[in-house]
Amino acid sequence: MKDITIALAKGRLAEFSIDIFEQIGFTCSEMKEKSRKLIFKDEEHKLRFILVKASDVPTYVEYGAADIGIVGKDTLLEEGRNLYEMVNLKCGACKMVVAGLATLQGKLDSLNNKRIATKYVRIAKDYFQIKKGQTIEVIKLNGSVELAPLVGLSEVIVDIVESGKTLKENGLVVLEEICDISARLVVNRVSMKMERKRIMDIVEKIKERI
Ligand code: PRP
Image 1 (spheres, rainbow, N blue to C red):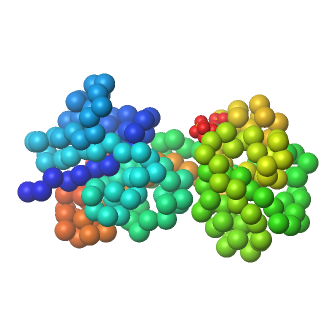
Image 2: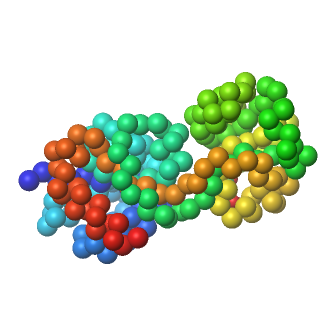
Image 3: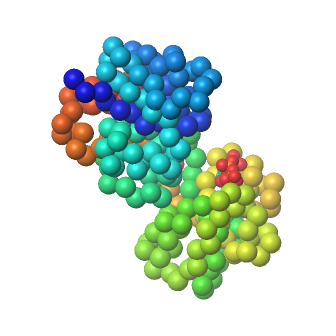
């Protein structure tokens, strides 16, 4: 029997995922110890856990290097990989929004050739160009996105809002909501055919725990 490989996004989401896998009877105790190891095995259940950067989880799963992945919906939308999305784990719930200065409230659609700063280039383009049919310029940033409208780099941002604290402390407001975000369990398309029973067993057990 071959190992089922599960790609986990390093950090808080991996900790949450490990807890869930332990609750459904898989052994991940070695992953809780501080180390630089990237592969962990549960020999008894023929499972292999790999720790990868969040944005790489969909890549490992699409190419079949991992059969299953656990990652945020924001990453899935941004990476646009061809995967089965099987379970909404409801963890890390937040929203993808358009935000900017309050003076833009109700005026967003009439603002032509908007510059949008974001870590999520694809999500911003899908929303403004494809859904709304607007001409925009997307400026890719890697963090501290809220700064962009404050220093004139862009009119608005597309980013995640969780508590709303970062927006508030920087004098910005939510102008439009794009979608809800939370952690998802995804499955490789070929693995779903070849290892359907074992994968569905894991999926069903996880669903019961949510
Ligand atoms: C994320 C996100 C927002 C912030 C939202 O940034 O990009 O900036 O958290 O959270 P809040 O609504 O609870 O304030 P992150 O912490 O990942 O840092 P970054 O700016 O480096 O991307």
